[in-house]
Length: 84
Image (cartoon, rainbow, N blue to C red; front, top):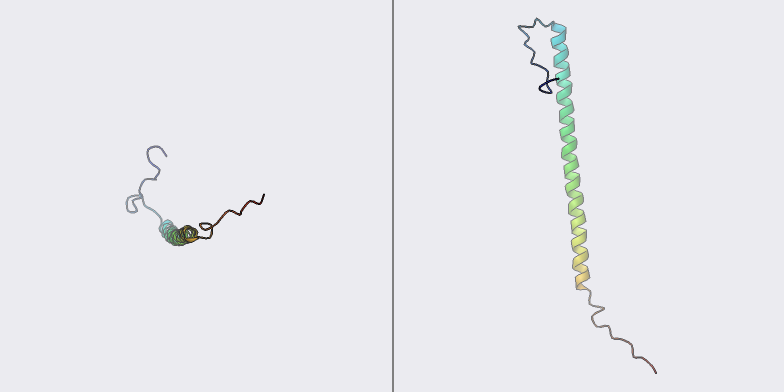
């Protein structure tokens, strides 16, 4: 295809297309619409899953930082006396 990636439009009245070809075109268009809808549904589900996983990871990270900042057991640590 030279200039564009699309085939030229088909004029059904001018080009004298057979009825079976028109029926076949309609079948292919219906299959293509179904395929596109399926891909849209899959993409939506993938985005929802990615968002859920991202929220989970960020919440675990935030909780880890929060819990480590509250730990005080090393603040009162005294060095043991050295025996001579």
